[in-house]
Length: 300
Image (cartoon, rainbow, N blue to C red; front, side, top):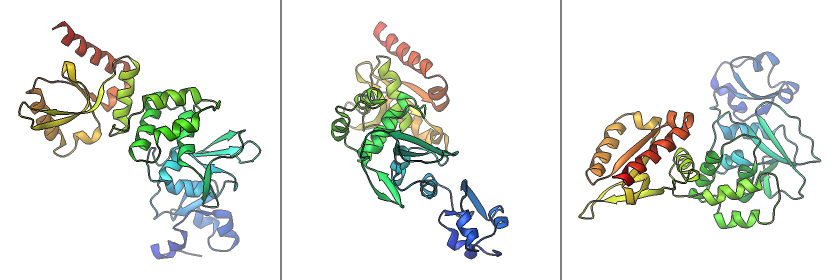
């Protein structure tokens, strides 16, 4: 079988098992190996005209999973509309210990000895409930996500209304699963006012160092006119701490940022600006910079 136009590939717009497609004569092995198709997992393909997203990879992984497998964690969050991870981050599952599921690249499997996994039917397998997916994000230490990053994920879930803090606290009460101690710490550090995951991470680095800032602080001039909102701030010392990600460097955003900060500086505020490289490569140095700025104010 040959494919000459994108229309020929319409039936392959959803992930499919290569072995099944070849068995029915819908596609040849040679075609599967050609640029016409994208290999998502071993034996799972999609037409190369289809943009690959994390949710698409979740649907692809579901074709390989046993029916009792539960899509969970950041993968389940993506399916529910909260994007926390990148396209090629591992697709996360939780399964009862007795259920077999062969490991392969791009799939992360966690097992539980507890009975029922809170979930609902999805794609011939199951999708974790909001509380369960959040619980798995908070307790899974094998993915080696930092404490600040996990707090950022929870902040995003809370901000989106996907999970409620009190419901999650009740869900964790009395549980002794691995990672539950860290999960409770994450819940204590969470704050849905954060507007981005890096902002959450910056707040957590400062908080665990004993420099707890206030998030999303509005600033008004002496006449009550709104001058701007600060990512993180120490109002008593009039010190603002802001994260400038890559998007702050594009278009007219740098000029807009500087104009806002100049107006706020005119009201007596100082700024510590943190870049992406500083936050992820030297977070302790960022903490030291903020501590030094606060110390200068105290000594003044």
